[in-house]
Amino acid sequence: MRDQLTELLTWYGPIDLLWFDGEWERTPRSGTRRDSHGTSVPSLRRSCSTTVSSASVTTAPPEQYIPPQPLAETWECCMTMGEYWSHVPGDEKYKSTHEILRTLVEVVSKGGNLLLNVGPRADGSLTSEAEVILSALAEWMTDNSEAVHGVEPGLEAWQYYGPTTKRGDRVYLFAPDEPRDAVIVRGIPVRQVASVRLLGDDAPLPFTFRTTLEDIQLYDPSGELRIDVSALPEADTIRVFCVDLDPGLIQGEDRL
Image (cartoon, rainbow, N blue to C red):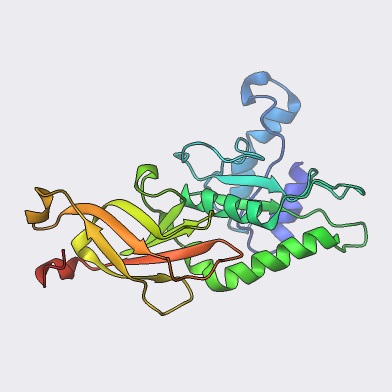
């Protein structure tokens, strides 16, 4: 292992991540030769000319499932498209594109990264099922990558029935299930809502607010945002709604 790591860390330029599969069986204190080598990996990394990030990433768990709560450390979810990690002829249990998209947005909304496995054939080609899924993912990301890359977890689970992310004053609402009539967001500063639209579409969506009778008199009340989606055509994929907040609006006209 040391010889292989030395080769990888020396001959192949910058390395962003060392990904070890199967180091959960024993601890460094188990006294085995294998584990004593494992404890020297950090010093080996420092001795090589290539820079490797020292941060660790938790991958197992979660493997093949999404954790119920965000993890405190840096983490990623490892998921297969079919049933197996490698190519297995006759594998008929491929996940649907919608399921994989839903997994992607749920993982990102919890601060994780999705590692989606691709099992090529011996000649490097992909199955038709994998090609269809990857093409659909690429098409969806063309319009919606802004809500996935470089974002952080958005709202709390009680505020919106779906995954959310955010970047600065912009909140992204994913809709895994087709909304009817309205999209509801609770517990946000309603006077700060500047605009709502679909990601990839500049047309504004109509919205209204509701607060309690007591809170309506507050300088910056928290309330319920209702986005009218009744005029939208039915979607064949997961929509993303953008809610732009502007703290400066609470200085202006009262729109409640």
